[in-house]
Length: 334
Image (cartoon, rainbow, N blue to C red):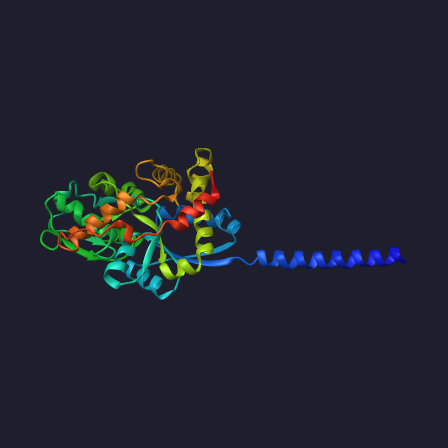
C-alpha cells in the first residue's frame, strides 16, 4: 500500500515538474520584440548577421528591421515610439536633441559610416563640383555636413558655389546618380559606393581620410525607453556585439563574404570588396561597436561650424549614455 502511495506521489510530482518545465520553456520561447529603423548600407551587417545567425534569438529577442526613406522619418518615428532603436548616423541623435528638444541618447557606436565622396565619371576633382548639384539625405545633418566640409576645404561654399539637393538615403542617391548626370556628387557608403566605382563613377576619397576621425553610424534610443527597458537594450547590445565579432573574426572570412553576397544580393567581386571595407581597421566596423568619442567630438565641431555659424561645440557627454553598453559587454566577456 505504501509503495503504491509513494509511486503515485512520485508520478504527481513528476507530472507537475513536467508541466512547470513546459510553462517555463513556453515563456522562454516568447522572445521580446525590438524594432530597429535603419538606412541601407554595409553598416547594417552586424544586425543582419544577428538575425540570420540567431545571435539576437539567443538573447531572447525578436529583432524586426525597417528601412527608412530619410532622416526626417527616422527621427520623428523614434521620438513618437514607432520603433525602439535607430541604427543610423548618430548625428541624427544630435539633431533630435538640439533642434527638436527630443531626449534621445546614443547607446553604442558602430563605425565611421565608411562614406566616400563619389562623383560622376566625367568629374576628376573636387574643384569640378563648382556650379553642380550635390545630393544629400537631409541637408543639415550627418553626411551632408561631411560633404559640405570636404567641399569647403576645397574652396567651395554650399549655396554660393554649388547646390545642395535633398533626395533621400544612400541607395536612393546612388540610383539617382545613375539616372541623372546632373546629380554630380554625393557621399555614399558600401556597397553603393563600390557598385558606383564598378560602373565608372569616381571615388575622390573617404570621409575619414578627408576630414579626420568621425563617429558615423551607431545605435540611439529615447532615454525614457532605455531606462524603462534596460535589460532588453543590454540584450540587444550583446547580440549585436556577438554578431559583430563573428563578422570580424578572420576565420569566418569565407562565410561572411558569402553571407554579404546573399544578404545584399551582390556579385562575388563586390561582396569581396564589401568584406574588406567592413573589416578595414581604419575605416570599417569598429571592434565591439565602441563609441569613438573623439570622432563624436568632431561631429559636434562640424555641426557647430557649419550649422551654427562657428559656435562653440556642445560637450560630447551630453549626447550619450554608455552604461547599458558597458554592462552588456562586461557580461559577454571575451
